[in-house]
Length: 163
Image (cartoon, rainbow, N blue to C red):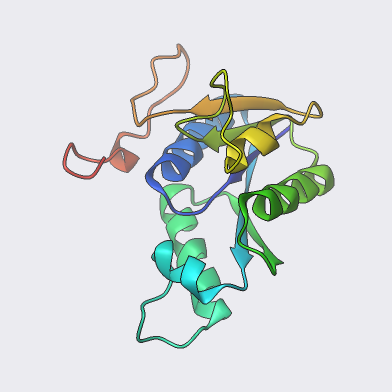
């Protein structure tokens, strides 16, 4: 069994990774983290992956994401995919393709709006969650796990100012 976490470094993606790690440790399973990196400098700056004065350097973006993943989940496998478009549909397509390759049992999604009655057209999470090949665990906010048998990774939870 493998747990997969789409990861863009956002607060909810970080929360999803921590939650997946908690479940993986309890169930002795592996975690694979997938980041999708578009060839779009504006998008990369909006994500905080590069600064305006920096030249576009994909390797530094990859290394920064890898370090963040390792900090949150040292045993997770990190992989990234490239895409030419930064549209949510394109990013979701890359995540679904990675899931087809990885074949996870559960995808842990950090999203505020996945599962709402109306999924926004711009929702990456909605498109990923629509796949019936795997179960989806939706993380909507940072909160300490209350599931019996899971050990919360307290050091990974943000202080009130960070969340």
